[in-house]
Length: 505
Ligand SMILES: NC(=O)c1ccc[n+]([C@@H]2O[C@H](COP(=O)([O-])OP(=O)(O)OC[C@H]3O[C@@H](n4cnc5c(N)ncnc54)[C@H](OP(=O)(O)O)[C@@H]3O)[C@@H](O)[C@H]2O)c1
Image 1: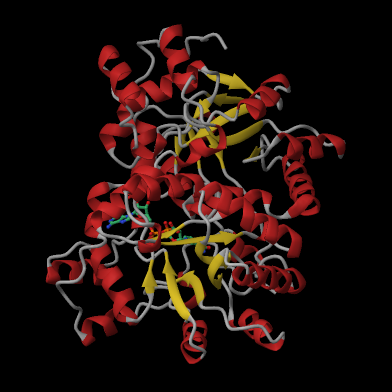
Image 2 (image 1 turned 45 degrees about the vertical axis):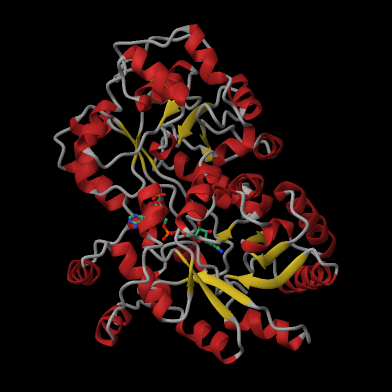
């Protein structure tokens, strides 16, 4: 698409007739101060969501800005609610970018109709979708509803979603690009080379690419200098040749996992020997490649993957196990988990049976579950199946899942802890105080807590220094009193920061 030479104040007209500024500020994990900083830097388009839990901060920042409400374009998003425990919990379903699609056709259409009604009532100016494939949009068309104004997708040179983008552009649907600066992982030589020629930051090169492709990029930052530089894009233009170089980097869906292989290799160098993957993460091929490239023996690493609810059911699971093995290029997987309990009793049991058969056939060493509440574990017992080896659940001081953990302990099920470092949000004074007392970073305090509680923590990082520090844990120990101080932070289910679907029916 040719460059319309946009500026920070230019806007695109949506199918609804409303105008949307061509650069948005991604508000995920941002507080009011960063949003105020963005408004000061000239952004007039803020992208929030119910599940980011900062709509109030956005509202406050707008109110305090001296700008007119009508001069600012605010997006928010409703997420799926089929985790079985109501809307309030469903807004926590941050886990997968697929979350919006999980609710199934009927609920998707109902939600869309409700949004159109809210638009007719004047509460919403434009209705759009996020993470929608062509078939999801076709579903809206087939139901005779007006087409969405916007589709928000993960979109950067490594993951270009070409067919969806073309479909949207042909149908007058504006495409918003999330993760436009690859979450800061911009060290590919081609980005660096182009950036040095234009004397710009690599992130600015990626944002220019996005703008020149006709997308509306949504860079997120809480660093004032980056908030500014990410908007400073309008006094240069990438040549056609450089656009083509960036276009050539497309890896399709796998491009969403550009950092999995280097991160896993770094983790092996740091001494980790246990990697937690999943079909849904679409990084099994990258993990398998990292194992081979590491030079480690296959039997010296422990690799987990998971079957997500879309792949549940007897036949689908057996096919899925073979597909995972093919992606990893492995003969066996160490641990196969049922990713979540969302498919209902019958499919959960069929899935478990299929995994046990794949184990008997030598394709899996151990079978386990994830996000299972006590009633899901009891269901396996009642059906006469062997006890799962593992239950992987969200687990950190704010969400201690005590009934599930007690049940697992009594029944010999090992508990793996996901979100052990609170997705980086570790500012709570108790955590900070312990970090300064032990002269450790907060992540190390939380992972020690997890280990000392007898869990198997699974910290995720793609940052080499953190990959190392998150494993540098074995030369200190938290006292019983400090463990008790962290134990006292429990908020039960309310302390969850991810989808935590343990209460699904
Ligand atoms: N079964 C399930 O349903 C489920 C759900 C969620 C997660 N999981 C598994 O659990 C793993 C971890 O969960 P998670 O990624 O949601 O949460 P997490 O490990 O608590 O947090 C990861 C985030 O925190 C940042 N981070 C890591 N170490 C840090 C440190 N020492 N200081 C500051 N920030 C730090 C990372 O950023 P950088 O990458 O920039 O370092 C990353 O954005 C996942 O990778 C996945 O394998 C499973």
